[in-house]
Length: 344
Image (cartoon, rainbow, N blue to C red; front, side, top):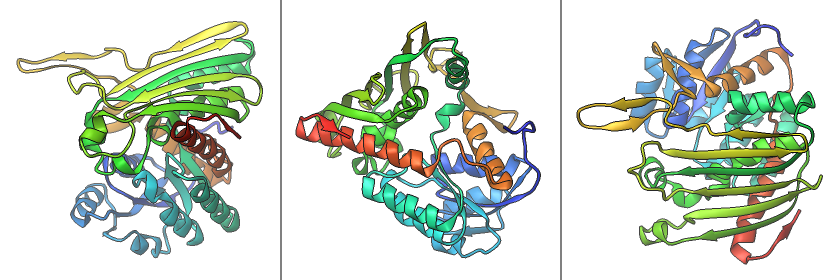
């Protein structure tokens, strides 16, 4: 366990993908003191140049292969659409780069296995960025579980949903993913972290109506029941067709029942209410910018990865974890497709 916030050294860094999430990586790498942003890449070269130059990158590429060819880059963030992770992650590891791969690891088990095999062959670091582990409430609950203050974790109920804006406007590629990979993965990761074991049995139901009518071939919602190897149970639900009139894009609820305690986490209450002459919104402050500097769990996760690279420590969420989670997520999709329980 590091006692300093930042490890000594300077990690030479590249970011592949400069969209909503990738732009955050660029901004954070620019600001943390033990990393230097060398290059960015995005299929939209104009966006790459705009984002990269704003934060001091020496290079901005349209092709991620050009970024991987820069010898001085030691580590990369990959923030690409879910279904595009395999080729880029494998190439980055084969090029000798440490990799911080945005969640999910992959959308198929075969892709996750290929990424893990590349990491093991390369000997480089691979962390899957399920950054919600760095949210205060989830991290604090893990500390309480480890200290025995809550007894044994027995049951999780987790809801994580989005408004219709996400699959219809924010993502141009929503038809290439499904909710287990996009949203449920965050809460499944937390449950697995708390339970300390893998899924044994999965049953899922999904329905397609609203998005199908809009020409987007991906389910509107999933309801999933997971039995874990230790006998614990997780109940996960997720949809992304909530009305855009809602004041917050994310709807979240997390409950943990233990043998000697109970935890209720509601990360998105109307904590910051803003009213103008034209509009009224609820703004959360789990993360964001304070005086122009990013703060919160996204930054904490990236700082952890940088420190692990510089100190040769094992990241909190490894490729092995990512493969196990991908197997469970793929089982959810398979169960919903077939109407049958999937044994793992």
